Length: 141
Length: 116
Image: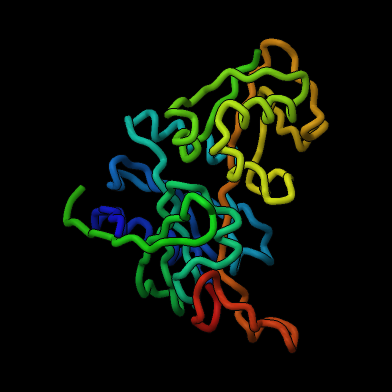
């Protein structure tokens, strides 16, 4: 099983963003290298109001900004985080259709506004399914 | 000859290159050239019907081809092309929110009830 390393501090930043987004989905990018998240970049959900409870969208413009920020600090975009409000943190078919290869997808389950758990997934190269990867939490970056 | 910028997750299919040189008179031609140079990238740009996947955005300079002529947008010598994904996803609608008779679809690859 692949592993994704992330500090508790960065997980707390994800938690803050997805709690604030609740009951809508919150999302952003994971910046890092070699399977380790070094920074997170919370972004606005660009979907229309009535869809944001179960859909998120990051625009190409925000994608470009994130790539530039990653380059500035000498890392890459390595994944995406998003929340599933009041629903399991497993990928949906919709997640699969829009997924990028090699990215780690952290999905955070948020029930009644409280973070329940995080799970991370990677799309297989044939785009047929996701494999779960272990999240290793560390006390510092 | 046109410079095409490749997004991070697809660079594994271009030998790690963030920019590649492609040729073609129209956007579609440049994509055909890209996929002939790097065949493994094709399934991530086009679906099984040969249509561009929904997350694929192509910019000619600063203009999204969706605001121009799509894949029929002409390319001038010296134009700079950028391939940039829209990143999206989301949970499956809760069965209680769906019309009667719907909601039997399970989240991807899983049997768990509810949203995915």
